[in-house]
Image (cartoon, rainbow, N blue to C red):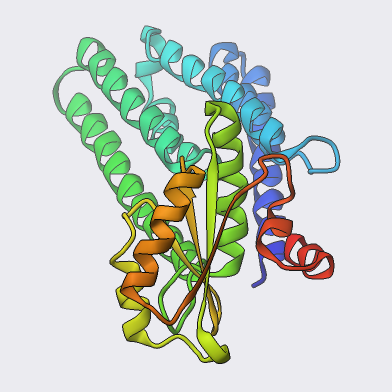
Length: 294
């Protein structure tokens, strides 16, 4: 399944979940359970906001709106745990077991983990005050088991996505960061340099006579840079290095150091214009820059 189909499927599932919550809210209102209907109404609003198409709202704005509505959903869920009549039915209590699934399904991993752990702790305290005996033990065991399972599953999924992203940003042969990652990092470093009023240096390392870089040469060059100075595989004959906070003097000094390590390479260093397109700083001509930006 492609990325576009996966996004459409996820949006459709969120919309269907919102419709299901709306039906349950209507049934609660019909059954004169108005307090219980609040959690279904807030859940309906939550799923409908999360499923809004990008043609109506930007993804960043949609996520912020989803976060605010999820805060309302959390407060309603906790407020229901304060009402004594909410503890008269295991069906009502089981609604809160879905909280971790909804959180990890709609929010980013770290944000969802914060909400889930906070909700589990507060729910634990409220249940300890209102329930006794085997019913208390059953609910506490269920809510912590759900919290543990959903957290472990979401963590492994998050870790797998991070590893996949790391693989996509590296050259498969050398293991160095690729050109696409270089352009992305140039853009981020430009924004940081503008924000902090600092400079940004870029070194381009070229082999003589258009010979490919050998593993030994790459290893020798890598040892000349600090961990925060990333080395990028631009082509078989060219490497690039980003130097945050670099000045003209530092660029000249680093150039001399690299020539001493690898006397045969050619080093071209320059300070990056902070208002220029990242691709124009990386690619030598305008046509390649437009392709790289695309």
